[in-house]
Length: 263
Ligand code: 4GM
Image (cartoon, rainbow, N blue to C red; front, side):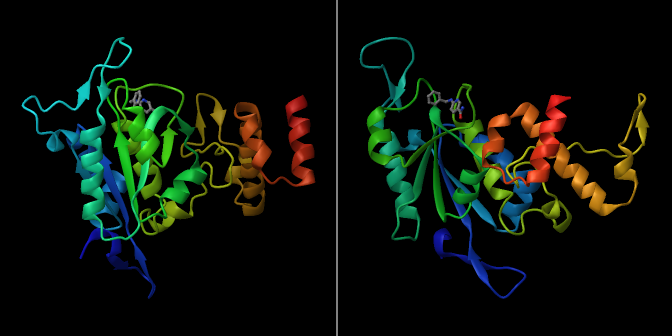
């Protein structure tokens, strides 16, 4: 049975489709990192997701196997050509058992910044193509006609889209039910509520004269939850104030935060 419609059983009686990544890349060997290691490696072993690479070089038939060419208008660098990318994408869609075409994501510094919300939406799709550029990028006509969404991991440039693609894959896979252990998935981590995470401590209780906040050692779970929420609000206000615009805050929390920021 093809990947897209393969259903896997989980702990309850329901079934769910797996998340299939199809990566168009000149460096398929890089993807063993996310496929075979850590949380994503275990989730892959459990059959929660798949990753199949398509190398544009396998879809060129001239003697030089060239996947890139000089840019119109001159200038430095090379541009990835339309045809090898198109034939790679045709191979992807021929290999998925779905009447719906795969969702095509191009990782580039010109894309919309990736958010946790967008990651969560992508993690629910059956088939996601991750197009990894090298050189100066790809022919604009491929973006215009075949790309559904251009995404940037951040405002910086790396030498290829592969590392950004792996970051997106990791962020999506760890959200799949069953990917994180029970304990880890219960943890309220960064962005689960649109806020930055609070500080964390483990033993010993004092290091270099810095004590673990006494509330965390009190055993009072209501007070601990309140302290953590306040720390998240305070950190977000100090480091990423623009994130607070989308956060639900009580009047009490608003007052407390304003008071803290004045001090
Ligand atoms: C230039 C054009 C993505 C460079 C297209 C890709 C950073 C990101 C590349 C490209 C990248 C990012 C490759 N660098 N911020 N480099 O997500 O694909």
